Image (cartoon, rainbow, N blue to C red; front, side, top):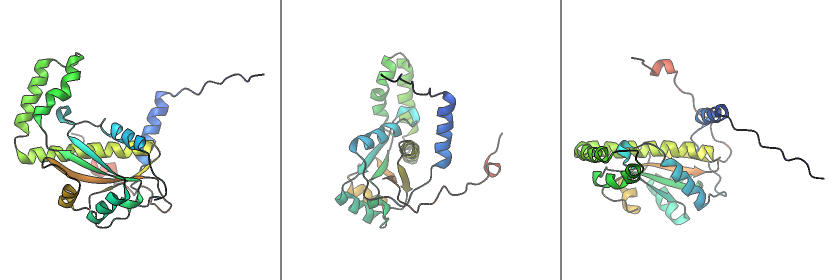
Amino acid sequence: MHSPSVAPPAVTPSVIVGSAIALIEERASTNRFDPTRGVTEAEITDLIRLATRAPTAYNLQNWRFIAVRSAERKAVLRALAYDQAKVTEAAVTIIVCGQRPDADRLPDRLRTFVDSGHMPVAMADAWTRSARAQYADPQTARDEAVRSASLGAATLMHAAAALGLASGPMVGFDAAGVARAFDLTEDEVPVMLLAVGHAAPGNWPQKPRRPVTELLTIA
């Protein structure tokens, strides 16, 4: 005699919202990783796919992610990150690179959006002209590279938490050395290292945050 099948409970919007808020409130930067537990190439690919859901100006998508997973390359990166142990103990350490905007790439990156009827051709052309003018200034172009990479890294951290993984961002590293060792182009800026893997015992919880009343101005 077969038992009647039971439908799984429905996932309501309120449950999704509650889970997302809990993830944001509970995420903490991890320093201690379990070096015996890895992540698969498919998991890394999924993390980066989710990271690229972050916004970029004009839909430039001006970022690149270098997933450092082999022991040999991790050792190189650890030496450039002032011997921070989490570089090698985490399952993978990702170099999050921002790219100085290249307006000439915009038509390709907007083409499917235009072809689907979401954006008029004239608007796409106007975006390209505007981006070309805006990022002619080198400092503005570098600022945009850092901004895009930072948005991608933040999204990646929350994606990792959603998938049951821990992460720890690092800005303490020899940027010029990383650029040389990992063959970054002249237009790429190594903005952040992000260790991702499985947490080991002994990590701190999320550190206290300043009260919103000290940070918020409503104009």
